[in-house]
Amino acid sequence: MDRLSDLLRERNVLHAAEPPVPQLDPGQGKTKKAYLWAYRSNALTAEPPILVFDYQSGRHGIHVRNFLAGWQGHLMVDDYVLRTRAR
Image 1 (cartoon, rainbow, N blue to C red):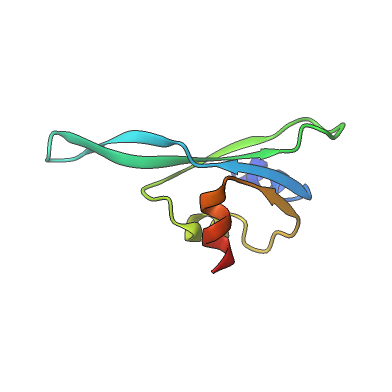
Image 2 (image 1 turned 135 degrees about the vertical axis):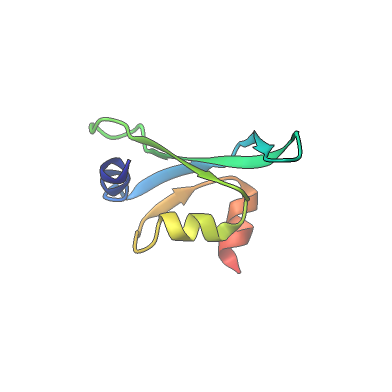
């Protein structure tokens, strides 16, 4: 995963989404909501596509900032992440 993440961050256009997934809450016998952040390279290049999943307990913008630390380019995302990154 580390190598794929490094290769992904070499691209200058990325797509991201954070679909919710159920997570078992240990000791509670219930599930809670977690997020499987998906980062994908742009399909409009000749390079092979790369897709990396980053499991996180929340939807906060800090997860995107941590995953993409040092990266520069264009990130195509939904409205929630755009608002979070703008703060």
